[in-house]
Image (cartoon, rainbow, N blue to C red):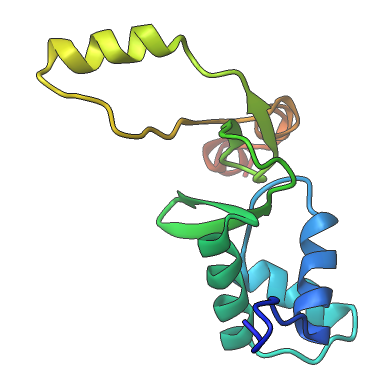
Length: 145
C-alpha cells in the first residue's frame, strides 16, 4: 500500500493481471511467468509468485492446489463461489453450491459446526476426455511393433 492507502500498481503487476485475464482457467505461477516472458515482459519468477500471493490474500485471485501445485485464476466476482476444475487443462467453471442446509446437516451429523467452506470439484473436461480417448496408449504402441 502507498502512503495514501492505495494499492501500488506496477508495470509488472499490470502485465501479470492482463495475462491472468487471458487465461480460461487456473494457471501455475510458472505457466504465467512463461506467458509473461513470451509476451516480452521482463519479470522474474519470484516477482510473479510474490504478486500472485499478494493478489490471493486480497481476494483478487482465486487459488487452489492441483496435483500438489498452487494454481491461480483471476476473480472478477466478489461473491463467494465454487468451481468445477479440469485437472487436465485447468479450465474452470463457476458452479452453484450445494444447499447450505445439507452442508449444515452433514457437519452436525459428525459433530462439526461450519465456520467456512470451499468447494472445488476436479475432473476432466470434455476436450481433455476426448484427447485422452484418442491418444494411443503405451501398450497399444508396443503391440504394433
